[in-house]
Image (spheres, rainbow, N blue to C red):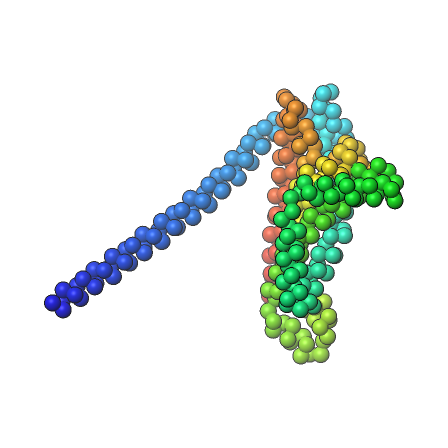
Length: 304
């Protein structure tokens, strides 16, 4: 009788192991399928954009497409230089004021503020990240544009308005990643610095921030990618003129704005030119990601 009980117990254990093994394999298979579908979607999107846009680039010439200042599809002119430059200018201006503010807020939340205050600020930043971009654009159109028009001149629809709106939009990305990077610095670094006689702020500046450098660089590059790829808010506040801005109060059109504004009625070479613009934007984002990877590796090696 005891042998039978022991045998049944062994059989149950073996069956349980078999079921667990099968479940693990099933989960692994499902995860692999999800990853494969994601990769396949990226590949298909890339191939589709390049297949639609590259023929136009080959037809007009890469240098003419990228460096020509005139965009007039009805007359066969497909130069995106003004929009490329406009995208870069707005992105850099938004980073110029958003990055210092974001890093300062991240330092305050992670190292200076009481834990409860830091959690409240973190919740507010996450709420800021969840606001739709069209709401930011509406706020810029109602508040920022009239303020610029009344106090600085011009019609308000300008590079400055776009940079201010984009700066607010990228704040949550840079703040959250920078804060997490600062919090990830081992506590022994700070304790050792304090033990050697450094003040709290000296420890932050000379020990914690250098140790979190790779994460902060990651935050800045991701914020740049978010800014250069933004569409709706930029369309609403920049004026959308295909000219090179001669100042912060001049109107401008970005590459993403151009695609959104003209894709609805574009046909033939005009449509192909918009796809080619998307391909250029795609390649630019890939370059940013490569920069992010290299910067992260350099920061990791430096910290070692």
